[in-house]
Image 1 (cartoon, helix red, strand yellow):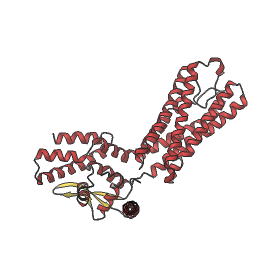
Image 2 (tube, rainbow over the protein chains, first blue to last red):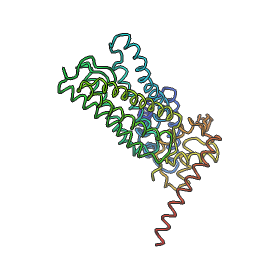
Image 3 (cartoon, rainbow over the protein chains, first blue to last red):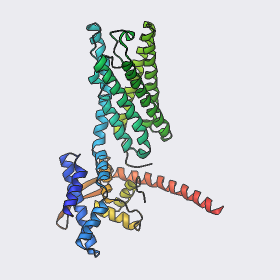
Length: 281
Length: 106
């Protein structure tokens, strides 16, 4: 035991970290461990007992690994999530002239949509980092589940039926080929969107008393996502009723609210990056 | 006792007494609390690194008993944070004590 146990513990703690940081942590905690063993032996423990005590005193490698991952990865994760969040609306805007030039051929595809999963991961990191993390896990799971359901259903719809990914224009009439499976996929995607909105709303409500700029943005984000969902529902009604006026209006509003929500997420991540706190409330 | 949240404050307070390495910080907190604040020592280091990233403390290497150790010392930003967090903690503790005192006098 002893040095093997410590090596294993350190390996678990540092495996997600850059090499230079990992090496520094190994040196620092090994010195701590040696001091701990020396003090225990000086207090009358046998060497075996001293090593056991020193290992027990270090605590769970999982907890310490999580702590280091938050400390050394959180700023980078927030930045990546923020940038990815911005890519989506910017790419959509860039696709408009291309779509016009290509006479309705879709160029805004799934590859731009799925990275939003990383945004969900960013939220997970952010909420775990913040002081009230333990109470926010449930909300984060709701948001995460919603994004996965939305992306998953859209992905299947895109692969099987070449469905639009939220904001593209349908190239065929829904009433012609709409199968029950396609309708079910759309329903799952909308439920996912609703879950995302609900997660944001609950989270915003839960943390509103903190009056922090960061959390103050969560509730508006939830409202925008709900708005986007309602507009998409309106778009579907417009398609089914063959009402081009309603369809265009609902689609435009869905795009605007959806893009604003995504841009707000990016702001939240940028803010989170500069507001990482170590003091709990 | 649950240390979550109060560990950064305790670390800053300990470093206000002079530069120390991680093991000394852990031992001082445990000794001064008479063992009540018996936290897992491994969790000290992520918090130390986070405080350093935020410019509240800085680390440097120094030899001790023929071995290179990483020491931490308090910076101006850390002193200011210590004063703020300490005042906040006292306000919180006073509020709890007021409630508890009120309960016992009834």
